[in-house]
Length: 439
Image (cartoon, rainbow, N blue to C red; front, top):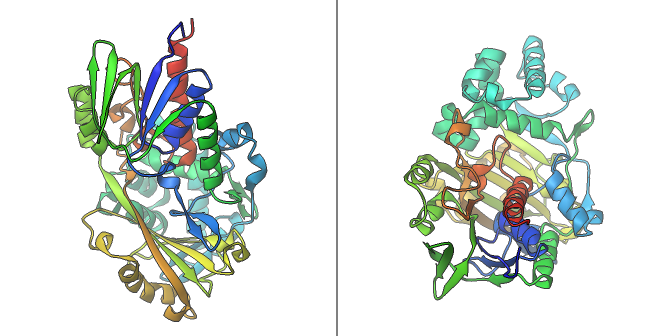
C-alpha cells in the first residue's frame, strides 16, 4: 500500500461493517467505524436473558451459510456452533401441521393428494433453476399460479407473501422466493430441517470480532451519528454529531438507504439517488415472550391463516433447551408490517393483548397467566421489497464516486437478507479495496 496507510471510514456497526473492518485491518489499513448507538452488532444485537445472552430478533444458521461458518473457523469459534434438531410447522384454518419434509407433506390435509404432488414438483422445479435471471421478470404470484395453480398458491404461498410484504405481495419478484426456497433446501434432510445456533448467542461472535478489531488497531467511535460525508479532491471528510475527521481515502456506508441518502447527499449521483428513492422497505416488530408454558413442540411455525395478525412463531427453547434460560420458555412472535401500521406503535403488553386470542386458538392450554415477561423490539428497515427485474434496479457495492462503497440489505440479491450475506458483502467490499492497493 506504499508508505502511507490508507484510511477507511465505515458508517454503521452491523455485521457488514464488522466483517469489512476485520478483513481490512488485518491487511494493514487504518480503519475507523462510526456507530450511532452505544454498541456494535446491528440487528444481531443481544440482550441479557436469565443469566445468558439471547438475540433481540430470532437467529439461526443454515448449512449453506458459508461466510458465517468460515468466519467462525477463522476466529476459532467453530466449536460454539451447534446443530440441534428443529421441527417446522404450518398453521392454517384447519389447524397446526408438521411441515417441511416429504413425509409431512403427505399428511398435510389442506392440500388434496393431487395438489400435494403438484406442490412437490413445483418446489423441485425451482431447485433445478440455476439462473435466477430467468425468473426475475415474473412476480412470485404469477409464477406460482402458473406452475402450481391458484388453489395451491392461495393455500400456501399467498399467506406467506402477505405476512412478509402485505399489500405489496403481488409486486415481489419470483427471484426473491426462489432464493428463499433454495436457501432453506440446503439445510433440509428427510427428517426435517437442521439449523445451527451459536452456543451463547451471536454475542459470542460479535465480542470476538470486536476483540480482533481492537487488537489490530481499528478505531471504534460509538455514539457518533454520521451527519455528512464530503469529498475534497481525493480525500473524504466525515462529520459526526460532535466532530469532524479528515483525510479518508475510502468511505463504506452500511446503513439503510433512507439514512444513506442523507449522509451521502454530497457524493451520490442523480441515478443513485433515484434508485434509493424507488426502494421501499417493510418494518419488523418482534414480540419476545418469557413463559412458564410452551406453545407447541415446533421450533418454527409459519402462519397461513390470513385472519391472524402475525406471520410466525419461533419457539427458541424448542431448539435450545430451556435450562439455559432459568427453565423459561422463550417464544418469538415475528411480524413484518409497515411503519404506519397501527400495530407498529404498540408496546409489548398492547401487542400481546392483540395476539393472545390467536395464540390461545393455536394452543388452548396457553393462558395469559403463563406469561412471565414481555419485551418488544423493532427494525424500521427490516426487508427491502424486491420487485421484478431487480438486478437492473439494484445499486452495486462500488458507487460512481471513486472510493465510495455501499453495503446494505438492498445489495443482497438474489439471496434473502441475513447475517451470512451481510458478512459476504462486507468481505467483498474489503477485497475490492485491498485489490486496488496491491502493487
